[in-house]
Image (tube, rainbow over all chains, first blue to last red; front, top):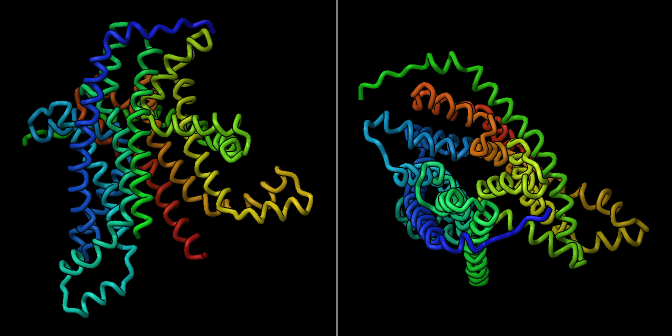
Length: 221
Length: 221
């Protein structure tokens, strides 16, 4: 193996990779925010005693947990426009796929956290005259939040890695920009190694920072 | 919406999808045991006191966990011909990427399990004259196997979903076949919906039994 590495070719196109990185961060942040909203609604529906709410919510969660994300991406981009009669741009399709998919996972994080709170807390809140919403807001959620932190962070990392699939819809995130640079420079090894390194730096730094936050929270618990 | 669904094209081409299912299963059946075995080896390196074993094991795990799988698959696709001097089938590149990715996650599961056993057990086994390998096999693994099982079944489910990314490397698995059909017949709605359902049918039994197993193990503790 006497491959001549040559990173100079891709240094020239570094601005394209930076653009891609910005695209990755943008789509990840938007999808996390929307995913949390979807997840909270689905979790509430899933915990509801009303079968008209919890059955569809359970089906939603099971569907997303048992099908590959790439199918969701293609479905939202190619199939959904046929149903709604409006074509979607890659960003919107990718955000829809990511936020519904991560919504299903966040729903499980929220539900797991809330169910982990002892029944006695509900009973105590009820004895104090609180209704369901008050008990949830003042007693259960504040305690459950702390237990949700670690799995929430883990899901958000998974989501950030999954944003790479948006490249298959030609949304200009990091991997897509890398493919463009590769098609100009024909240096796949350098391009994809550099991109892997960029992902690594972003995710590793973020996960190390999050671990510090987690340790902090654990100490205050 | 006045779209007329037409599943006739899906029914007629179902054998094409089934051929994809076979390749999806092949990828899983090869990558999972290989990933488990390699993961176990890596975990031993990871917990070893020797830094020349420890450092590469940590690097391996962190690199694969902090970069998107799709980037890993594409990297191996291009790296293969350069490292080996000859182009290998996309299937091999996908298999290698999937195996190494699974190995990195499994290594962390093994490590967590093995490290959950108190040091005293190692010392006791040593006092009885057992070697490292004997202690691992007769004392440590029998105790942790049960607790690691849910984590491993989760990995198996993740892997089943991730095999769909091999379609990007033009491996003719289920997702690839689905995209091929959908672009040939311009029926993405029906075809992609059926592809999602086929994945669901393949993967759901796995997660159903793994959830049941997890409940059963927890009840027994």
